[in-house]
Image (cartoon, rainbow, N blue to C red):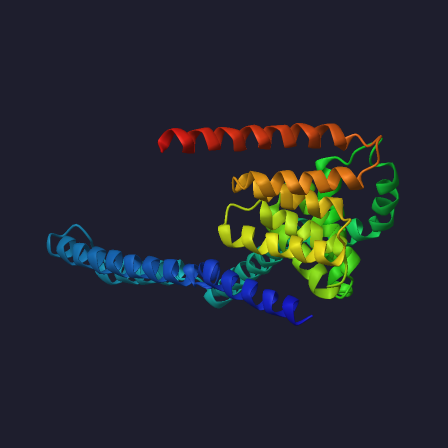
Length: 300
């Protein structure tokens, strides 16, 4: 309510400044100018009468002077105050009409693009949160569109404003950030999820993955430390082993990469599709290691 009162006062002040000329006494000014001209005409005509009397053109100068005086009196408005009051009333009417017009236009714009409209859109997105969770079950067959992902993210933000300690919602928001290629959203969300549930290895793995793919060496080092911590807690975690092997290969520590991938092969089932990719990665690392050895030998 205070907001609308403040807006109303601001609108009134703006209208007073913009439409102040409507309150001016323009009729009075016009009347004063006309009276001044009439008086000047009267005195000018009076001089002419005196001159014509001396020349003998006018036989009765007193009668002519009386007629001039009567003409001047007849030209003065009988009710100037009533005319002025009418003009003021008309100016006030125009002022209040324009005030209502400005207020109406401002209100219409606010309700269409202002925070009220934004709040309504947020509530509509929040009402669809249950629908989005149901859509997750068929996401592989019918992937989310970018618009749906954005609405899902908005709904989760509203949910997290109401329940900021919900680690599952933070983790889901991070996954949506990854899908939207919004790294900052994903990083902030995963950070909150790990803070709220530090024992959840899935949260840590996603957080570490994001850090290790960062361009910042500090983030990479932090991500690798988290991966090593996950492996210490669960040495069969193939996702963490994959990240560690990738990090070693990137650092050109091919021996560590080969050892980690070989450990993964022992853990994966024989029919796992990832085995072929891992074997190619091992061959690539061995080839790179061999090439590095030849270069070192030739340089010596």
